[in-house]
Length: 267
Image (cartoon, rainbow, N blue to C red; front, side):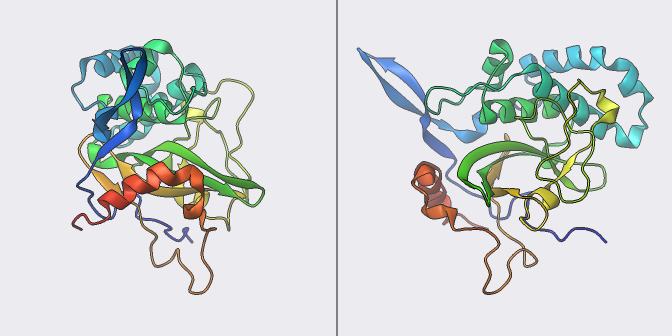
């Protein structure tokens, strides 16, 4: 029996206002000022030459593995290679404030925090030939019984079987097993071969019934569009909310104010 679908991971309602205002700064006189950008710019589109060159290097490094995979599963194999690279070769580094790097910057610097790594992962997936309708970056939170909600961003990939999977950017390497009711994926201490890794089913890791720390999405986007992510009928139990009301947490004021500006968009 499959897991109940928690959210419309592909996006529920199209948002017309895709501008964020406080994620990049520029020098002005002796100080700095914020610059406004369309959030879709943080995912490099297919055909981007920098991401294309990076994928070519990866595909050469993993040529034997990619050539051994059945054609109908080639996008899963490419996604595993991209995830392995971002997890293992781009270490997590918290920035000062909340400065969003573009994918080419993260690639050049070789480091970034959750959203920087998520943007790079999604951009490399597109460069690898994964169709845009199977790639998303989600802005949301991690919640749990023993922690306050914390803002988070993560890439999503829809695998060959149509399952939306979380490619957690902050893991030191992709997991090799997910069993029972884990607090987190089972991550080995050593580097893993691409074929050994397993995807994180978004339905399992977004439900507090299955994990002690759950992913709570707010919006998702790719290089083309931005959408709300909303619970399905299976997710919401009358009289018993699935998650705490993290929306009152001051840490999310900026994300939520952006969401409110776009909430009137057409379905």
